Length: 298
Image (cartoon, rainbow, N blue to C red; front, side, top):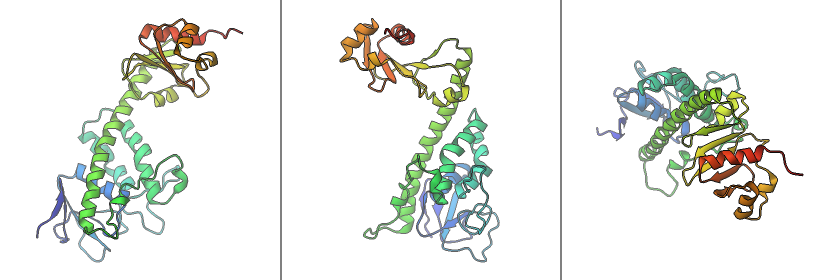
């Protein structure tokens, strides 16, 4: 019997061939992402999607999102809850058991912190959505892109084909997200070290890096981040919610007026919200910060 497959994931109707089992029917982010995650830690996933688990031999098979076992969360009392109140879904349970081993396999440097970052920023989000804990999702967008892969009423496509389409999307997302998570955690470590060594109210970064978590964690006196812009020159960003560039600068009629006010001829841009300015040189960026730190002339 031919197996329908995507990369190292094969779908089968024969339980004796399967090494993984999940539910059939309508799929969601939880079971699709769980399948992709398993494909990263198992050389070959042979998956059987079934409506119910009865008296089958499940030895040496990973059963998830069905069957009331170790990696299912549909039991009467669910299957564990985090201290913050979010119940585990199947991906949360799989991540808790295999996540660190996966990060070790792909040679992530900051393994523990990356594990925690992915759990907090992605896995818990899927857990809460799948457990319908909408109170935890107020600042998130519901991950419905997977649900949209389910067969539509007027679409001539099999359930297995639709599931494979969802796997393709989820696989691309997973790969991009892991790259992002590793980069963010590594950047936070680098920036925290720079903050420790910094005696000024500003920090200079050689390239654009995610810095907000580091600023929050450090409780430092850093008010500004200067970084090389991807467009032109240097960006100067006010990093605290309560701090911004002077009103006289923000309200300047045009850039020429702003240049005259600051005495900086290569000032390029002033954000209308007072949180971002751009200059052509690093020297001018530092000069702009000194201008902003001077008492207002009233």
